[in-house]
Length: 446
Image (cartoon, rainbow, N blue to C red; front, top):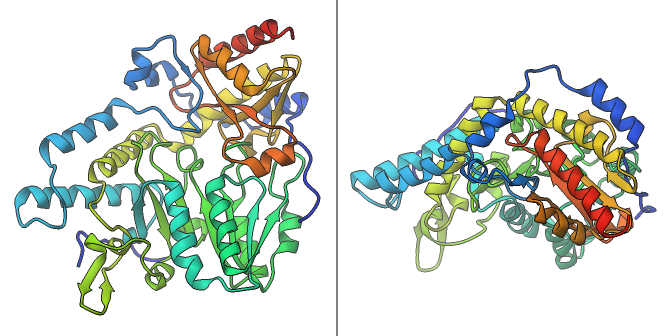
């Protein structure tokens, strides 16, 4: 995806892997060896930026992998848009509509810059990662996948990056092939290499696993796919990466990259798909109506230019503005420092969890290979029961299969508990988590 920035202001089956665990000793050692030497974030000041946390001192929010909390500047940006610039963009020949159009255009520019997208119109605003992945599977997939061809996904995928490809394979009479994982919860590159070939048309995988926290080597996998399956497109689920890593999509070399705003401090209902221009221009529209048209005749219709071709209907301007403000907030911290802060908290959490009898953690043991997600189980306590006990102490975690049932089957568990950290968390949240687990063990006789 190498190009100069362009803008458009308006329309014109192997054996299953065993459970992935982090050995306590390896985790403790890894925490010392891999912790980045960058300045620490002062979490107390960050909590003050988030109204829900500033007013709820007893709240220990450890579910940012599901959705993040929103800083005041994001909430203010949305409110100020509605108070000062709200109109239907692209359609009105009056100043207020022109201002709304410009705000939407500026928001796209800001988000593109945050993600390292040079060709701005190739960033399509969607409702989030799920819609973005469905857009590719529908608009590109139904046009290009033929009987007997192969689609490769991995065993760690969120349902949003698994089910659309599964259903496309069924409809097209193609074959869905699943790359298994290593025992510590990584994509098994040796197995992936064997799956790739002349029949492979799609390779879809997550940049960061929402259930294991595994950070996958995207650029390396792209290089492998280009060599072994030159006719395949690479589709990456970036929902868990964009909020936590310094993502430069152009440098990754992928064909499509999907992300969600609500996991990166932005509002719900906004996200995006970044695609190669040539692929996007060849694809048919995903939805019809509104600004995605160029000309409508009685017997045929032509499509608008990018990005409008894939943004039918009234655009979600206010939430795009809010997402742009979230990018400003994260850049104000610095993504390297966001990452360093999370590594410190996860290192502490893994060591503390390893010291609690009966606790088993899942995912890579070294900190450089995992994000701010820690999934775990406690012997004798169902994750849903654990979550209920923790909630009584104001600790918010996720419990369940995390929209990754194929992975849970491979881990041989019905569900896990998942604690996930972000810029507003601190050691008091880890303390509360550990104390809550100990209390649950007492209640359940552990």
